[in-house]
Length: 152
Image (tube, rainbow, N blue to C red; front, side, top):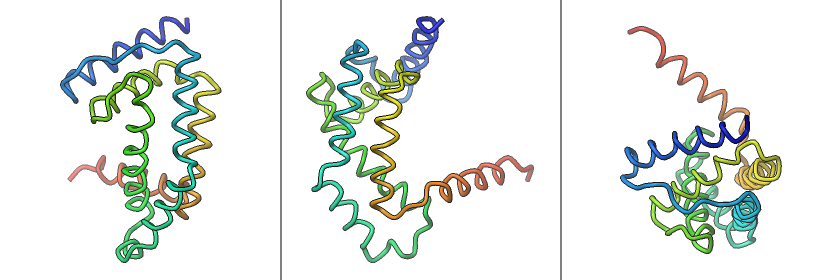
C-alpha cells in the first residue's frame, strides 16, 4: 500500500540522515504542507534574481572548460543553497542537516504528481537557463557508472 511505501521511505531516510548527516528526521509534513514546500522551492528557483545568478555563473571564465555534468553540479550547488533558504519557513534550519531533513520530508510523497511535477518543472527551467542539456548529463553519468563497474 501507499502508506507502507511512505513508512519504508521514512525509515530509509531516517537511517541515511542518522549516518550521513548525524541528525534525525525533521518535522513531518502533511501532504498539503509538503506540496506547499515543493511549490516554495520552485518559486525560489524561478525568482528572477536566482535565474540571473545561474546565468552569471554560466558566463564565468571556467565554465567553458567544464563538461555538462560538471556544469550541472555547479548549478545544483546553487539550487541547494536556494532550497535551504526556502525550507526555513517550514520548520527546517538552513544548515546541511535542515536541507537533508526537508528532502526526506518530500521523499515521503515522491509519488505525488503535484510535488514531483512541480520540482521537475522548476529544475528543468533552471537547467534550461544554464544552457545545460540534461540528456547529455545523464549519458555522461551512465558512462561514468559503466566505467566504474568494469573490472580493473
